[in-house]
Length: 321
Image (cartoon, rainbow, N blue to C red; front, side, top):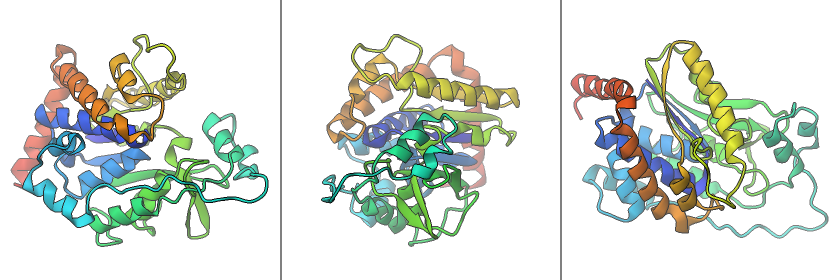
């Protein structure tokens, strides 16, 4: 089975923490997934999971509660979450579009249009890549597949590190996937400039459509359920929901079951307007944990939950932790 971990900034990572912990409470350990697809915030979460961080500890870590010795040992390797300096570098002159050529190749994609027309981001995200590399001896990728999505800023093509390219360290791949256009500096690797994989899709779930998996779990912090959203909050969520729906349809048309997690109105309220607001992390994780527990307790998802539980049981039998 596969897991899709979508984009969403600091707040999105907190949403992932709540959902993945709820899944662990229900009997599925995300470390047992055959393949993980990560985009932006989801790439960091995916890399942490593939490094061995127990998903059951993700919510407690976000909430400042005690975590297991196994989780503590990994946190000790990096010194904890990176402290980003969100002050942009001073610039001189009139800001120019980061990639005028991309505007000609955007093919109507709002994300690519924005990435091309916005000025180049001025905030360094080096610390993100550095911390991830500390978990992987600088360059070694995990044995189990981890696909990290980024976008080439000059031609708009999606690049999947860990599948298409293995010449970058996992830290570089995560940093590239997290390089929000107009905010973070693009990541330069092998002569190309890379930005956030969410420019192509906030989830990139379509990557798992042709793999004949039993089940795909798609966690999408940037979309929302069809329930009426709270008034006054951002309206981009419906666009991300439509994109996710198309990707899910593609997966299901190939015979694979899908279990999605998208924020309900209460979670959208907890997440707020600013995806990079760390003050929203705890409220988001609490709301996501509660909502995911309720969803997993529903008879509507019982069959898919049994598949997840069986996956973890098989992994534990084959390789005791």
